[in-house]
Image 1: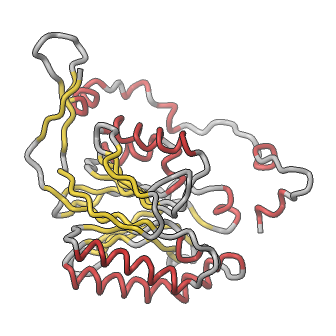
Image 2: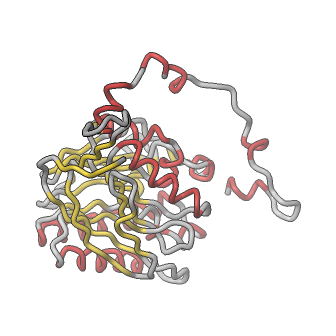
Image 3: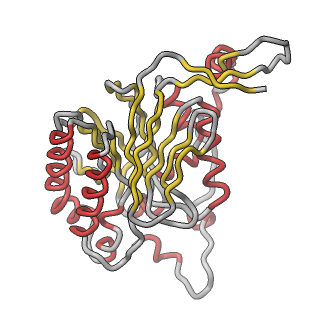
Length: 303
């Protein structure tokens, strides 16, 4: 038996943008497209808009390095996003690469506040083998940002293959998890994972990706219900949510009794049994993990 209940919390309007799936345009075209879609959301009163992973560089990767692309485009893009945030007094969360002071490259999203000032960033923790071969470094933390609309966390693409990503954000108090991604190929599994993460942690999860048949830009509520799904090309939507939405269940089957499932599970967690989650185990080498057809060289993945 299940019903919904609400704690007194702030309502927030989240802007979702669905970018196109056109493969023959310039970096500037893709950047301008995202900015235009974001501004459409802001004109409709969005408190926060965020961008998908890696969209602007999708074609340029073939001929230019991450270092070159970031050096040329990142600063101007940040300035344009900052101007939008100030113009509409809203939060904007762009995606880009970061080149640190030590020369490391990170896959990251950053938050611009209502004055257009960066207040924090998240570096992708779980990187793919392709990113590793291209010199991208792993982040080591899941920060949660205390905004005036509520507490917001971020996980990027491959992060969601690991339940710990959303769990840590929820344990740190996140009410909404932003999930920028490039896309996925596991259609049914992708949606199941997205909804499961929301259910497990009683949080909203908002996704933003390329227009693909596998994944979608949308919003899942703390009960695991898809409340917005954008499959069309070059689309946008502003979704109003109530931060801190609570889910009540009746796990005891006692008449008239309900439990706040999030607090119930947190209260019942036997953390003494979870030690192995942070232990290293023996795993295969990449050459044993990745199998390639005979006509394709597995060395291509390292280029």
